[in-house]
View 1 (cartoon, protein in one colour):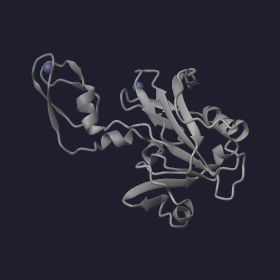
View 2: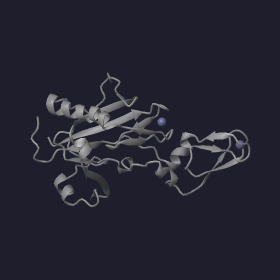
View 3: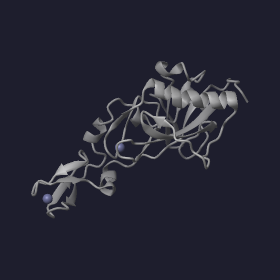
View 4: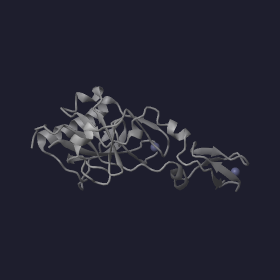
Length: 221
Ligand SMILES: [Zn+2]
Ligand SMILES: [Zn+2]
């Protein structure tokens, strides 16, 4: 075995909505309430160090949620965790030829039949509890940047959308930069509903990413 597949999802403690953890990042933005959730090194150690221990030492390699999910807390947020042995694949589930990928990485990106895969070395600060893993494969790199809130200042859609104020019926222009707007007419604070908000900020889904141990790794079988 040369890789461990991981899927992680938090339930935001502030708004209760799902927040996928698609990257080994010190902070993740909740797109629903715009809270930045900090994930300390010791929390990552708890999440991933334990996965390594279970898969490598105890041969526990499940990849489905069983009927009995024990609540697991990360920084006060409920966390759902799936993991197991699996060779790295793309989002479309195509096997990633890792030797070729590592040899032809271009700014951490590898392209396989129009799909782009983000691959990076394990950051030093996390290596102590990730055993001999060498790379992270398939992370969502937009979750790695320190200031994810800056994404909000550059809405993904350039179109302004007109929305009707629920209090006075006035027309509000929405550009996706703020979740709560003050109506120009009646001064009511209007909370932008999910359906509209996610046109600007497409909801992130939980994606599978990988700890890669190298082809020659001969750990527990
Ligand atoms: Zn939230
Ligand atoms: Zn109004």
